[in-house]
Length: 195
Image (cartoon, rainbow, N blue to C red):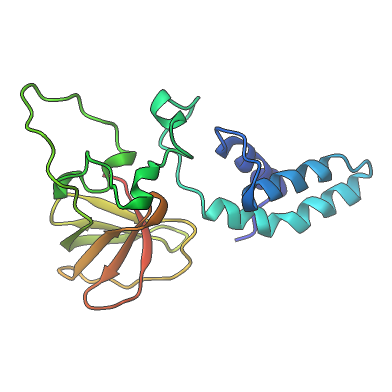
């Protein structure tokens, strides 16, 4: 799928709630700023066209934004909504049971009165596929017997084949990401929880 220059530019600008000054994302934004300064419209468009593949790659590596609007105070404490505690083995404490695994993108429920202290965080869950579907772009959506629904991220280009009843394991990855394996396969698919 070829992304339009306006779509890539708009998505890059809207996707960053904070100013990015280093790394590939910052480099692409800086280069886009240089393209914007080109006076000749044909040369300016050619400049954007040359950057489109790099911009698409940066966007594919970005996490989905959970909502529109300015970042919350909690999101401002982290980079793109990720808790950096997970980088060093300190997983989010709110994910202590299988039903909460991957729920950081879901709205938070109000705290229950008299709730017990959280247990140690888990690093993976295994469940059976009760149903599955594919988006028009070939990305899978799986429904698990635990009631969870997971979707393959747009940046993952691999196609997966499922059957009902097959066991999948979803594990915590770096920078708040999640990886899925099917059965005994070692092939990883990048996913995010949608329910």
